[in-house]
Image (spheres, rainbow, N blue to C red):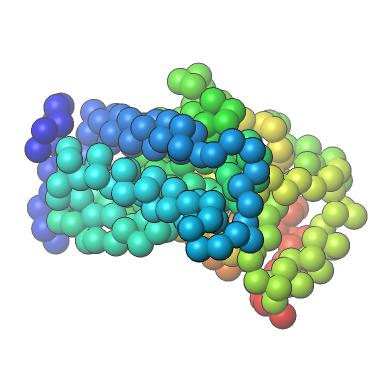
Length: 285
Ligand code: IPD
Ligand code: CA
Ligand code: CA
């Protein structure tokens, strides 16, 4: 393999031993790929709002193509230096690998924002080692913000450490959330939102799960919850939020999952959890 520093020692069936240097190197690879994808996405995006309802060779196709192009670029760059690794990407990258490392990629999180030229979209790349997320980067190109974390090593924005804001009481909390794409899911999400919005300071819907979790990590919102995010949406940003002091989980002690992702500093997590639990948010109409 072409990368420098100590290698990941992997003995099949006996797990993968990693040193801090290895994780630094994995993060460096992720950051390099995310930056290149981010540059490509900014440069190749047509100016203004992309019309969605055009014909086949329309900008809608172009956006789908951009999602795929971003994922291809990222997987190619990583594969060039780590050919033994596995991949899981939203746009279809899926391979097991045999190094113990798997990359989890959302090539554009917040595709609708990208389509409408709203600044809240991100490139998200995480690396699992033996099934556990150890490093993550979320790059938000329109804002020029790059969030990173290494498990146990804290979270940073632009290389500077970040922390969640001290948790306010629930009725003072600014809570980010998101909605799925299907009407059946949204019907319940609207019902749950009705139960939440009267109990908190206010609610924000940014349009990118990864960016929402990074906003939590740097104190721009106090909490985040959503039914429906996929693993690639929260793999990197969930680590970033955790390393910034948030608890990231599901209902009733479960881990975060597409059923529900809830994230907040511990005290607020508890209160928002108990409110959400009464609203039965893990269902569709
Ligand atoms: C979506 C965004 C959005 C969230 C959806 C996700 P995509 O990802 O993260 O904020 O509400 O649940 O699917 O489709 O833009 O990659
Ligand atoms: Ca996504
Ligand atoms: Ca996506």
